[in-house]
Length: 502
Ligand code: UN1
Image 1: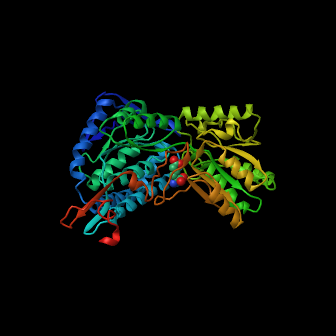
Image 2 (image 1 turned 60 degrees about the horizontal axis):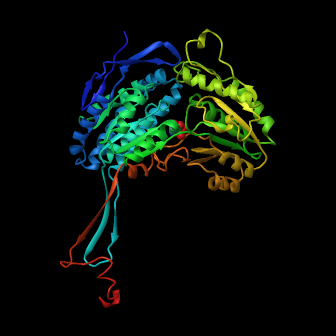
Image 3 (image 1 turned 90 degrees about the horizontal axis):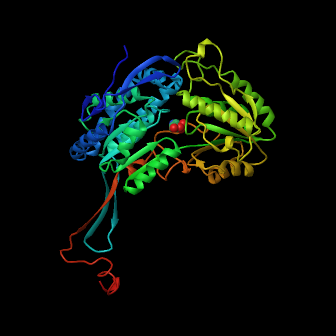
């Protein structure tokens, strides 16, 4: 019997108004059905927003440190449930257990960080230009935040958005990816157990084009945060612009890892394998381009191809599995389309490029680590986001050239440089057009307490995580208190006769 799940609205677990459901499968074995989840409609979103609005009136008045205490409790519950959560997440999303454990840990880190932020949320005081007058700013909550999240970090990304929103005093409606609804369900269950009041966190399952759209277009949802494709993000941006909504976008990447001839090649090799094929390449931060210095190009590539071709594919819960499946058939079809594009463009297929054979992997969306060499800067393979285990290798002759190639794409999330030259490292930090640059580490591995995000078409200027996200989820308010007992006119009374006259 397949379990049927519900939405969580105003603290109640409700069946969708549509009475329709979708079934979620294990991508490593599609005969394994995880559950039936609500295929919600606009009426469910309407109800969730109404509940969130009601809850906002009381939640906004709970002192921020007390809001933080609830997040700390939720962090504790996530920590206690880490193993079960990770196993369930691997079952529905496919990546290996070590990675889903990391994903849960990122949620725990975010909870504890947000909890501590409840005791900061600093405002400022500034000297007034007038006597006996006090000037200050502080942060106020905004209202209902609509959060739309992707499949690749089923726990971490919802928590990045939700926890800062909550500690700032907002209430939320979460519309998680329809590929990982179970994880979102568990997160909301644990939040309920932690003691969040009804309506503060609402969960509406469903499709982006229906439930997601209703949330984006809802006039009472002034804040939106979306992680996903650049195309969808652009559409949301148009709506948000028209409706004057605050919007944070995290979108595509085409992240490059540069290996110079003076690099520690053993270290770089481990970095490339992890960056390119971890999470089956399904990270916005995945290493999808490898820029190899010509002096080490051939040597490095043959070692890399050898290691990549031996990575063990399988169910992420099985011991010894190094790479899980892709999320669904459409993702695999996209990877295959890009393999065909690479071949047409004349790139050299070094390893992979074909579906695995054999009964063991036949029931999942598996695709092997795939490497193309001789990829030309400017080609589609080099420019476009694939979101799968496909690595494009470009030969470079200098750091200068590597920087040019790195910067020659529309995206700007992360980049990496392997070198032993300190000067080169600082040049890279300064000149690579990305939100994040790693030195002697791959393009993945951002930590929860630092700002996360990218430049150019990757984002719209906001950052998730770290201290900056608290500004996104709150509104600056300024207060002036004049205790002089007289009318003091700013910009006039203190300058008319000149300050010396006073
Ligand atoms: C993503 O790729 O969608 O830096 C998020 C990392 C993770 C987060 C990635 N901490 O790879």
